[in-house]
Image 1: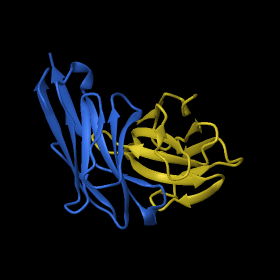
Image 2 (image 1 turned 45 degrees about the vertical axis):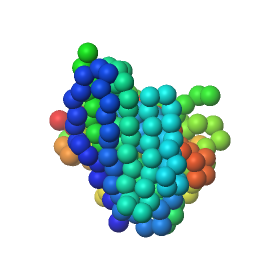
Image 3 (image 1 turned 180 degrees about the horizontal axis):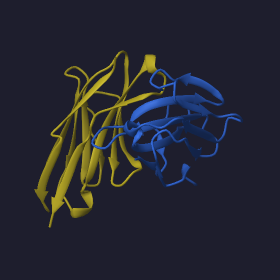
Amino acid sequence: EDKVVQSPLSLVVHEGDTVTLNCSYEVTNFRSLLWYKQEKKAPTFLFMLTSSGIEKKSGRLSSILDKKELFSILNITATQTGDSAVYLCAVEGETSGSRLTFGEGTQLTVNP
Amino acid sequence: EAGVAQSPRYKIIEKRQSVAFWCNPISGHATLYWYQQILGQGPKLLIQFQNNGVVDDSQLPKDRFSAERLKGVDSTLKIQPAKLEDSAVYLCASSAPFKKLFFGSGTQLSVL
């Protein structure tokens, strides 16, 4: 059974801080790892990672995958209050079709 | 591009009552998913459709939950009878084959 573990489960920082969110996984026949941001109810897509060592970047957010050690990190630099959300990590395996297995998420709170 | 549409946004029912949720995916997306997200947890897949056929319903509690996608477009998820532990956000998502998922805004269900 596919498994995703995220840490920390919650994090409180001040505006301007840099944060690193962690995601470790176990999946049969890895296909991809995805990061989503969930502010209210609908998760919104951030990154899809399929290859080790290649950083994906979007503004102040970046993510990288290590397929040997089976983990990924999501970095947010110069955090803003609008970054407050739950960040979800999910993995997709070839044997599970397009099914995503999600972690519990990291609740990030950015205080002014 | 229109997103994934879900209704209702909120529903409050008493235990043992029945409830139905509706989802209209992004036009052209053949794959449709229903996820259950209990407070503080990541989304858990209930059922996955490819067009109007079921791909994966291994985590659907079939004694009380049912879902259909008759014409390969919109879908309904039903719970009958509801239990207290069914209180959750029910998220619908859609995707093109082997592409990222797009989520709807979800239905917040409270079972009293």
